[in-house]
Every structure is written in structure tokens, then in C-alpha cells.
Length: 446
Image 1 (cartoon, rainbow, N blue to C red):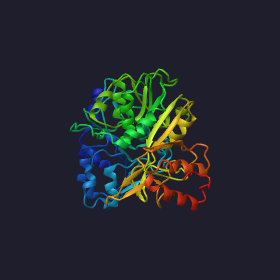
Image 2 (cartoon, helix red, strand yellow; image 1 turned 135 degrees about the vertical axis):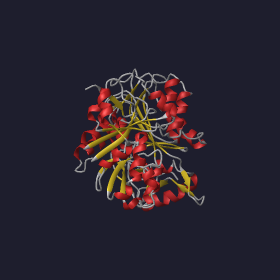
Image 3 (tube, rainbow, N blue to C red; image 1 turned 180 degrees about the vertical axis):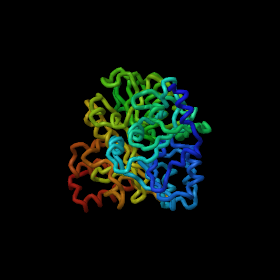
Image 4 (tube, helix red, strand yellow; image 1 turned 60 degrees about the vertical axis):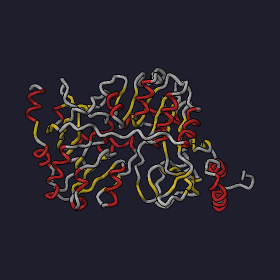
């Protein structure tokens, strides 16, 4: 059978496709920019017939139609591997729940789960002449989703970039139904506004620590993005990329000639990533680009893989950090903001790397809704806060007031070093608390 004939035989409407979904099913909805669109509308239209659906997804980049149902919690739960702003809104409405995950292990979760997907549906690029649909920049864990799903439905979107890599595409023989969507533009993640003075102060310190030939991992947010922009303006050269998330900053670095990949031993000359999310500039750059290699997250985020790359530089944000060096990068007390993701993978891998360094960065303070100033460096994490990175794993911490390496430091050294990164208005208060906690020596600086 030719691929064209097989395609025609499997082509159906979104309305017909979602009829395979039954009450009580586990349904995968796609990932980041590949979250379904036309199929979401069709499922929303028949949601009143269904109950107890368990839907998996993550890092939503636009609001699904099913989220807009007034009685959404009566029909389904959304189980997110990593929350975005859209998903946070659903938490308060009682139908969104976080699924804690060490991102590098996600493919195995699908292999081992007692609740494999009954139905998996996600957006893909148009089929190529070999019968393959690209997942778009979302290799991540998608092949394991396909391998475990009872029914696989793809929604074709002509706007989806066709990326190159490993386990980055699904063959038509693995597909049960094909739906042709309305080809909406791929959901974008804004690159952010102009950097703040704090962003610049933090980024400047980090860039000074990066050698020529280093391999970069950038997290999401203003500070990692500012680091990327500052590298563009720097004299750094012959850099490489091995990152969980491919962001717009890497496009700018590539176009500025900063990325060559020649110093990596594994996947030399390739920019390796697990998923990509950004603006149209990013999607256009990844489309059919042989320089960029989309690979499963259990390879990309593997600590040994990262550790085998010399001079690995990992740069990530945090919400707050306590005087023991415990990093919370995902919640505000009991309120889940995002997820653990792969931050710990890269913190561990960068330290294992010959010449590697991991940086956890943040502003020293933040203002609440009332305009009151609070310190991000706390005596202990707030009740309900999640420890994303255990204190034994944290290396460099950076604020606008300086940089401190926690590795090998005793509790009194950590307290002194981290208080030195706090805003001056909070230092005396932190010292008093450190004394109560018996982690402040009389000989420490005041």
C-alpha cells in the first residue's frame, strides 16, 4: 500500500476521531506547541457526554477549549507534567493537577505506568515522502507516548516545523487516524521584554565565568535570556549547545556565529535539545535545520551525557533559596508555579563535567501584590515550598549583589555567603535568624 493511499484511508474528521474517547479514559493531549487544536474543539463539543477523563499534557502555550467549560471539573482532570500560566488558572478551578517529574525520567514513566494512554493525540507536521510526520520541536517523550497508546490520532498542521533528530517523528504505520487541522500558527512563547538592571547585573557575572568552547544550557526567563544576549555582544567563541529547552537566545547566538559545536565529543557540531518553545523566529530556524538535533529527554537530560561534555555551563532561575542552600524553583509556598523539570539534571551534570559550572540565579528581592518588598533569600523555605535542588547539589548562586559557590561549604559558610547575596535591607534579619538556627559563627562577618 502506498503512503498516499494509507493516508487517505486513515483521514477522518476531528468530530469522528474523538468518538473513540470514552469516560474514564487516559488521554494524552500533546506537549507544548504540539497540543491539539481542532481535536480539542471537537472533544469540548462532546464533553457533556463524558466523565472522569484523565488528560495528560504540559507547558500549555494557549488556553484549550476544554478549559473554558464552566463545569470542567465535572468531566475531566488535567494532569500537567509542567505548569504554565494557563494551567495555573485551572488549578484554582479544581481540574488541573501537577504531576511531579524529574524530566529526564519521563519516557520511563510512560513505559512503566499502570495507566498508559487509551488515546494519544497531538499536532504534527505534514507527512513527508517517506511516510513520516514530525512531532515538531517536541521529541522529548513523545515516542514512548506513541508506543504505549491504544489509539494514536495525529492532527496535521502545515505551520508545524519539520525538525531533524532522533525519535523526532512518527511513521504513518503507527497512526490510527489522521485529522487535518485549520493550520493555525504555532503557539508562541514571548521572548520577554528588555532586560532589567538586575538581569544585566546577574548576567554580567555569569558571562565572565564562561570560557571559549563552553557548552551552554539556558533555562527559561529574563536572566538566562539576558545571558544569551550578552554573549552575542561578547568576544566568546566556538560555543556548543546541549539544552533541555531550545529558546530564542540560541537563534541569536547561532546567527552571530557564536555556536560551532566543534568542541563537543558527542553529537559534535549539533545543537542538541529535548523540546523547543519560543517565537516564530525560533520555529523557522529549527525547520529542516541539520545543525539542530531534537532528541528524547532521557538522552538530553541524562546526567552522564551532560557530564561527558567538557566546560558545561548550566544557567537556571529560582523562586527562592534558603540559608541551607535549598533551591525552590517551582512553587510559591503551596502554590505550584511550574515544575521540577530538568533543572536538577543539569545541576548534577554540569558539576560532573570537566570544567563545568551550574548557576542558579535570581533577583535578591520581589514585590508582592501590595507592593511590599520581600527577600528571595530566606532563613528556611516557606511552608509548602518544593525543594527542586537539594542543598548538597547546588553550585553557584547569583544575585545582583554577587556570586557564591555552595559546593563543599559547611552550614555557617553557606549562611555567610548567601546572606552576602541578599538585599542589604534584609541582611541583619537573616543573620538573626541564622543565629537562632545555629548556623552563624561569632567570627562571621556582620
